[in-house]
Amino acid sequence: MVGSLIFLLGIFYNSFFSLGIIELNVGNYQVHNFLLSLANGIFAVTVLIFSVSFLKAQNKRGK
Image (cartoon, rainbow, N blue to C red; front, side, top):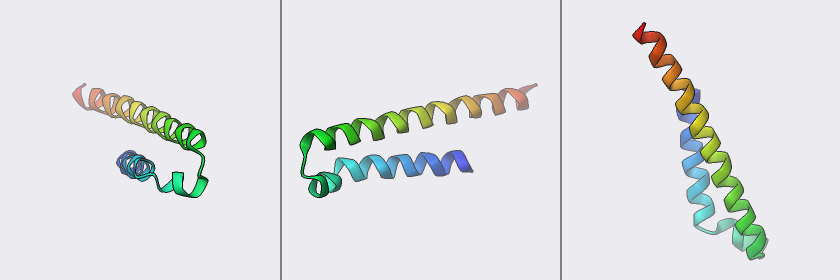
């Protein structure tokens, strides 16, 4: 439940940054790029953690 919630939050976060809403507020392209890569990094790590925990749960069920 928490994992899927974080996953959805990550997708929202990514699309929010992709639309460039932050860029309008910041007005600095470099800062926007940094925030975008930071958002992507956080999203990737979250997905990785979610995948690992999901696989562990699947293995426990399998045994």
